[in-house]
Length: 579
Ligand code: GLC
Image (cartoon, rainbow, N blue to C red; front, top):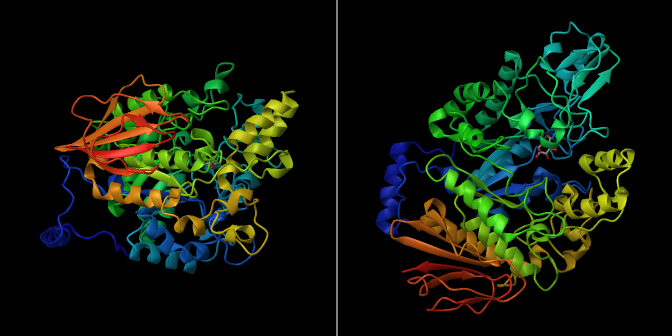
């Protein structure tokens, strides 16, 4: 087993002592529970769209290997890789047909080993996406399961025999008819799929399924991966009597699907079997129905998972805008709930969202640069582990598709069919899709202004955004004022200032309609963050004692010195150390 980043405690202490004698280490936090995953800056990498080296238009592992130095220069310290397992790609890898094989379009296991080694050599840890609420319908387990009612794998999935009539309605997130039960004539029965019908749900109530999953996780842990992100895991436990749910439950389906009985036992078992013995970090997608659920997932003494990944934040921006007030109160509430116990993920985008700057900022040529930098400032100065989605370090924007034939995402295509069959207002539907579709956030990485943005020499699987001529790595690397260079300054600032990691968060001037201001305090260290979430100049008054400080970073030149500003330019972000 290769564990290059897991130095034994005593060696670590010696190394720390040696390091301290040369350069001063950042001040240790008051908390006794320092963890690498709390101090990590995670880069979420969507491999399909990152870099293609074989000209098939699909990103691959060799492409990631080629860009490892780029990742290191960003100053990120961990990568969360979206699924890279063998898959028929009904849902871009979230439908796995072999959990121990690499998707052929992405490369080979040898590529994987080289990639992991290259990451570890650069001090970057790897978090793998584990997709086990469901498998692909092409997974051998499912092929066997559906082949006959008495097949040994039958009970790996949820089946309802048709002689019992139609099963109680279950809502499906991706199904074109919204129905999570699919009739299968082969054995005259229905199977359950919370996502698309190509993604049958695994039956976690079956202990054999659980052992299979732990074996898979051990396989990757043995290879030396450092963490797991559990896809859609809050839905894994189900009441296998399949009771009727009240009419209209689908409007609030999380209440019925998330954190059902059994889930915590499964997680405790997973922790005992894999997470604890291999010392891998874990984060679940979704944090349940409420704060209590979230705590039950991640409070350290419960020995389940490490980090909560809650959606309330990313659910805020709507077509037509959002209120800063809502943002402050949602992020503030989550922070307060986790101030003493548990640990949060901080993110404004991911592969299931449209682009951050188009949803939260202002992607017009005038304000794109400043607003993208401001949003990165927010993510990298809040309490919780920051998750930075590929391309957001450049301020990549939505792509603006206008016809349904442009879209690739199963959620968009099936959602369109569903809306059509329900007689929905299709113009409004398309507008909404244009703003929020997941394809917006999946367009190829913009490396250069050259053909296909330097992503591929072939035909990219999803079009490259036309704005690659203005927004790309090559240009931004040479521009000190770019979103990219600002991002690099921010990662460094966070790494060097424990107050930004462990410091208490306190909101200032809560009612200000344009400015989001807060402090992060750890012992004597006090850092002030001022963010103007608007396209207008905004004034404010700092509490007494906070008007002097050392500006550490700003996204709009010139950098103020001495007195802190009482006016912020449009989308200006200032981070300062208070005396
Ligand atoms: C999660 C993933 C999403 C996927 C779904 C089904 O929500 O983030 O991309 O489509 O699960 O696996």
